[in-house]
Figure 1 (cartoon, one colour):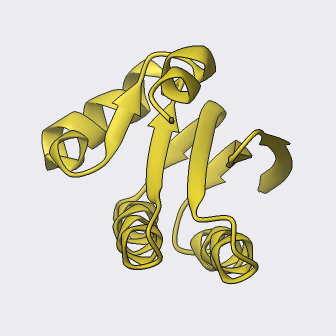
Figure 2: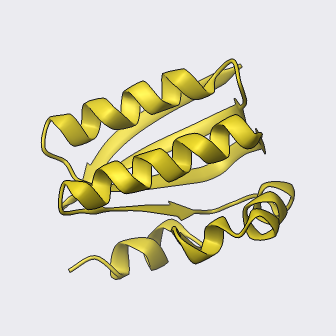
Amino acid sequence: MMNIGEEKSDSVVIVAIEGRVDGTTAPELENRILEVVDRGDVNVLLDCAGMTYVSSAGLRIFLTSARKCQQSGGRLMICSLQPDCKTVIETSGFHTVIDCHDNREAALATVS
């Protein structure tokens, strides 16, 4: 089960994820992010405060979404990872290709 919320802060769309991002729910998240980018909002922040699990399918969505944002002239950021999810992101090396921040405020402060 996963819920996705969305709000805008200046030039950044914040996509709040609650629940599990796995093989079943990852396509829904991918579609939502692609809808955001396709309408012209190319700076996306994934707020993962409520994300309880991320699988390899979820990691793939993060990577493809980051590439889509970059190709469109923006960027994808992640914030507020729970400890277990943060470990997965760091172990997989994704923190070196996607901007990860401790909280929403820190992420938003990096966007000019």
